[in-house]
Image (cartoon, rainbow, N blue to C red; front, top):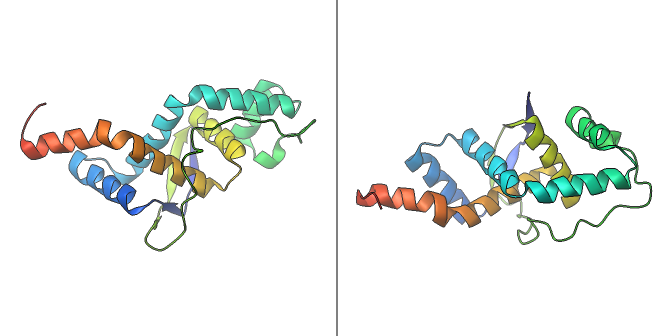
Length: 168
């Protein structure tokens, strides 16, 4: 089953928005599909970290893995058990190098809903717990990180090949 996350705005620096727009225009990505792809790709790469973090968090809350998972999938963070012996340390996260993005007019764009499969949805909620910031900032930082790490490897080469009419 798919889950929707309402995101009224997304934040990104000027370079990220330029890359996003160019990718949509030149490679045929729909805005919503590309944003979903950014999140799915992030959790595909960092699944092990967030799975381990989920298990640490469940243990710290004295919850079984399945109950913890179901609560994140079907309820709210507020429905999780309180920490039994304090919040666990999660170590260095995949987003630690991506700073919070200022909510200025030139960094912000209106958005609507991001649809994710259950598993990715639960991992995103775990990431929010680990990150401790608002969901809007978390998704924006995933978006920012995606275009910082994937631009020169995935998107730019395709655009350049089309512009030069070459295959390599």
